[in-house]
Each structure stands twice: as C-alpha cells, then as structure tokens.
Image 1 (cartoon, helix red, strand yellow):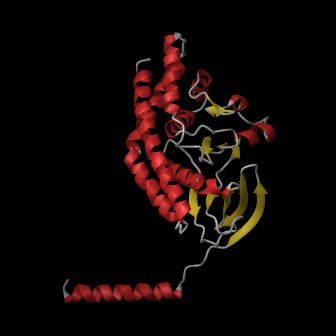
Image 2: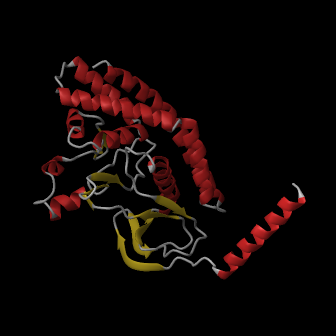
Image 3: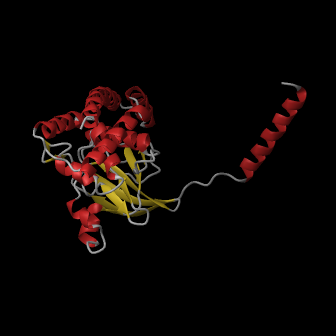
Length: 301
C-alpha cells in the first residue's frame, strides 16, 4: 500500500467515525400489546419498528430449547425459497432481557407476524368470503398420535392451490406432521399461504410413510385423475429441489450455528441441544433416502 492509499484510507475512516458519532443508532422501541397462554405456550404480542412480533416460550421449560432450535432452523432454511412463504423466527437467548419474556432467564423465540389470517379464522369468522375448499383444507399428516402421511385426500387437496404442493413437500421432507389450520395463514391480497410454528419437525420420517401410501395406490390400482398425477409430479420435483438446495450436511452445520445463538452457559441445556442436532442429522439421512425412493415411485406413475 503506497502513501497516497494510506492517507486516503485514514481520511475515509475519520469521516465515517465522525458521521457515526453524530448519528448514533437508535434502540428499537418495544411496545407490549397483549399476553396469552395456550395449553402449550406462553405468548406475548409486541410492536417493534412498526411490525408485530410474538414472543413464544413453551410452558414445559425443558422442551423449550429443542422447540426453538427446530422452528428457527426450518424458518431460516426456507424463508428465501420462492416456492414457500414462512414466518421469520429468531432466537432470544436466556441472557437477553430486552424482550418481555414470561420466563426471564429462559430462551425464547421471536416470530414476525405474517400477513393474512389463519385458515381456522377464515372458516369461523369470514366463512362467506373465504374460498370453499378451506372447509376441507387439512394438511396435517398426523392426528391423535396416528401418522397417516400422504393420503389420496391430501394428494387431491394439493390440486386446489399453486402453493400447496410446495407446502406438503416441505412438510413431508422435514417431518412437519402438525400443519393444522391454526398454523397455516392465507393472505387474500397476495393469494399466498404462509406457514408458522414449525416446531413439530425433524422427528418422524413422513417420506417413508408416503412411500408406503404410494405403493398401496399402485398395488390397489387406484385411478388418480390427470390433475392429481400432474400435481404429484410437481410435488416430487419440489422434493428433489429441496434436497439439492438444502443438503443434509449443510442443514446440520446451520443447526450448530443456531445453537450458538442461544449463548447458553447451562451445561444441561448445551448437552440437550447437541443431542437434538445429532437427532436432526440422523433424521435427515433417513428422510432424504426415503424421499429419493418416493420421487422414483411418483415419476413412474
């Protein structure tokens, strides 16, 4: 570096320091709006920088870090995917007292409120104006601890809207079995579906269950409509795209990065999170292997 470049660099740094000193960054003002407790979680609605957020902590404190890890991981992974619209979620560490947490010294997650209303709210409060198929919209792949996966009814449901094949593919690959009507939002202005609260993930191999169901459809010679077959093949292509975009090893690396955001000093919590990352890694190996077989089955329909 010559003398001219050195002087230029010093001048630029000096100007930057002066400007930064004259215009210090303002701290975001947090306004608490409401609190609510469900059967599983403590929720606090806040307003910050003209946006609404929900701070969430599980009532069962020991399960809280695992739930946060899985929700944040899936949100961070697919938030920029053009085929999917999901809630932005971040970790609030146990030591962070900036936010109004229910349990002050326990980690929490902060969820940006998505546009629109939940499917449940559309059905109960706006039944006159909501699309008719909302009344039959069920994307859950488990009910009352019984897993049933990719059924004929779910295949048919995917044909009802352009967003649904991607949502079901994401749920299947990452094991989100609890995509119920409160966890799916619909925004009428953009005609888009949004996913929230994705913590029932990375546990049960729904791809393997889908393989079994497709085999039954083939064996029983169930006649699928042309639209259903076309939608299934689109679903298979999305599955493949998700595996290419988010390879298992990179997902695990990202999970470890999120664990660091907890800034945990509790050895038990650190051990729990490390174990959960290992469980996620094992899940991904099995799910991706089953997904590859599932894609082959669908391609041959």
